[in-house]
Length: 123
Length: 434
Image 1 (cartoon, chains in turn blue, green):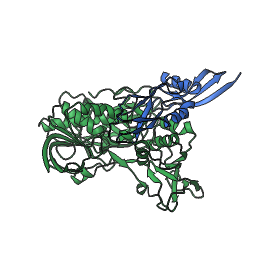
Image 2 (spheres, chains in turn blue, purple):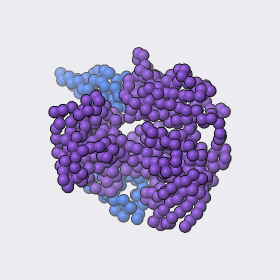
Image 3 (cartoon, chains in turn blue, red):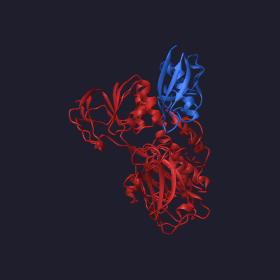
Image 4 (cartoon, chains in turn blue, orange):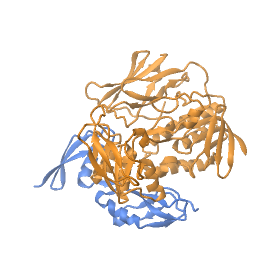
């Protein structure tokens, strides 16, 4: 039976509890050191399937600026962040762009869209 | 030359200026103007493309541009005038504002009330007196952020970050995302000035080491930076001999603090707080010059934009009331002092409290990190109020509503932080100011 103890620093609130999460055969068995339910949920997910919001830019032509900031509408698995960045590096859009517009739908089949974080007017 | 008059003019179109203008208009100011020197509204938020903004204000996590967008839409849907690409040269007592723009040339505006909302700027290499040569490739983190996120330039490929402020941490991740190698972050203090979340998600996620208690003792390179020398420091921040080592790099980013961009206020002769670098204000955010208000990072550097919006709304409402002649004037202002453990407190004075007011909201910064603590109010030397805090960090503002009945009629108020005896279980939620 594989038993691994992970040290996890909670990031949910400023208190920043440090705790340990024990995983046995891929299942979280014990959590120690966390002091609230949000922290417990974060720590368990952080060990089993860590996720992050991804923000970056894509090229935009015809606008006042050369770049459009984009944001994932939901967190993506941490180990796919650089795949998402590679995908977005090849994306180019034309002004005008409206805030909230979908720039890439269902990126890499992860079920997460990337949306424009701002308007870019034609210039 | 145009000459116009407005009830309220906000100088700066970032989060503070927009929130101040909107709330001034809402509070009945008829003619409201925002003057912004950039080509668009939004201020620094437009380059902060990461998310985490607005949890308090909008109850969701927005990107910087996303947060700005909400306010830009509100301004667009109002009848507030906006002058872009316009730099204010002077705002003089009496409300005479002189500005220039490439389109309109020299313009003079008469404002009944003025809200300073110019934000802050970064401390530079000069501010931390780093020795060595003066090669290219040394940038402040915020300047690099604008290059990478808005202008499409990468300032370097082998990066060292000096200072562990949030902008530096955010840029460590951002540069990594854009293909640069971030070799390390060096922080002179024994603790980081950044949020724990940023340490985890911007450094640890990518294996970027954070060296606490380390100072840069030299920057090398003739035309382009080639590396830095770093040494350990002791608890007095003195260099520890024989601990020096070199790190090769082609880019150094400085994240060593922010200072209010308050030249206009200084030129107008405002009384300033030597610690915040901003104006001394009362609970209306009125400065020592009647009719001149201040909010946002030009007043004191904030940790969250949500607090900036909230504070600017206070300044905007007060500015509107002043413009209508309805802001209570006169009466002795009481001093509010930062005592043991407190580095800054805003507001720094209390004008006579209005009838019906239940509490006054104060914003604090701590001197040093502390565990469970007590925020204490001493009124004329007597302990009048205590609130428990689970944790205290200099990087995070403490916000507390102090009941008016605890303030009483005391002539001098002083806030202190003391270690809390035992374990502190609860923390008061901060809602709307009462």
